[in-house]
Image (cartoon, rainbow, N blue to C red; front, side, top):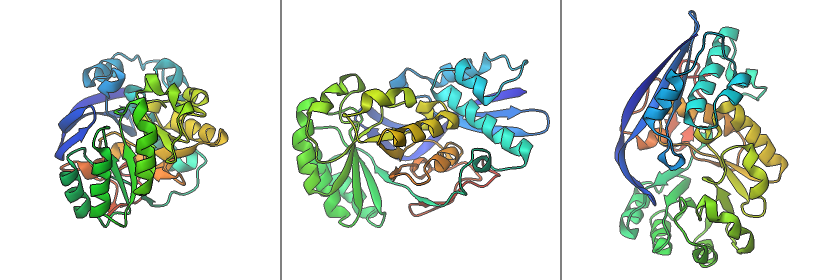
Length: 323
């Protein structure tokens, strides 16, 4: 097999800000895995929060010896969970589907995928700016708000005023401190917030087991693979599955099933990436409590062909895109 990996920069529609900083573009790695007849495609975003860079991903993929062959099972041991393995795992699924003349969902034993409703993310800003943004997107059924701690009640209140009928979830990206969890959870409950994502740094989240929170908590930075689930019991009620964390579609499916087995609800999220990265996530997102695969909606343009977005409804991937 021949592997081609490309560094890509995709401009965002507007500045995107979370508790850790702002950016105007997203750096992706797109790969093609060719066997001489068929080509499998994959995409990933290296996340600096996890010690990843675009250059590191390219070096990892470029250093692989594919002469003896590679399959999805051996890949799980060959590379650690993360962006590089995700792109390659998804490309392997796509390649195998093309070889077999089937769709990935058939090969994985899944039911035919339906459209899903994705959250739409509002970038962190002042209450006034977030309220104005919410008003522009008030017709979307589910809004996800980036928050950071101080001033969050005011931010969410402004969004609630701007989008009175939307369901709301918030994402602190590890930006809160332990003493904020109980009072902010109580306050945000009054505004109809359904979920709080990753309030505390992953290394400091054990205290959540002892803190009351009427709004369910979701593990994002604290949950990468199925190996993380046991220690999250009692701290979180929901886990966020992102393929760039799990290291691909293979582990994402395993994490989803084991999360259900342990009594967690499931959210399927994404990095800021194109429809090529959203396509496998769309299959994982079937039937989950929360879907957040709005990456292409945050870009100035999307890869073509892409997923079909109609408002917040996202249709299943076409074979020309992936799977």
